[in-house]
Length: 234
Image (cartoon, rainbow, N blue to C red):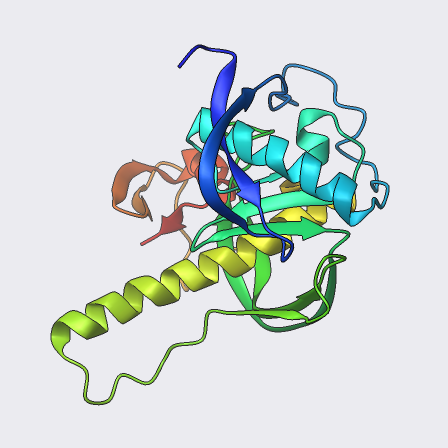
């Protein structure tokens, strides 16, 4: 396959990709907002028809497929003024003129964005949300709630934990993309991490910080930037 082509899914009336893959031209790309100006990234985008939205969604899926490093993409990230985004966590989803109807159970998360590479921030989102889209008469419900594991084997419970993590990720990704369509970025959702200790720690005192599986030991005076980037003091 040449550099200016990629595979893209055929879109069903329900708004989800299906069927065989076909080769179509690929032109758009994600605008790096750190290096280039994107006048649409902080703008509430225009609503579009379902037909227009499906065509734009096809382009967005092309771009995600071409890059291979994202799970969601909004139209303004590639310079298109349209209320259209796509998500691909558990299954491919198209969001046309989406609106959040309800949100419950706040959850802390660490988010990154293709438009701001290397600039992830801690945020607060919601585990459970309900949305409506232009192409579907029914509302869509996303939930990261734990399922009942009674009678399940150890292997099944492991799969259930992975599924729950994916459902949480899908819910947060949907919220992230809808934010884009309303002119909001992850920096607007930054949650300041406050560290409280029972005793005073000297500036040169060595402390341990952790983020995922990564661990660092640094002087206390040097850790603030890490804490703002999602690291936690142990």
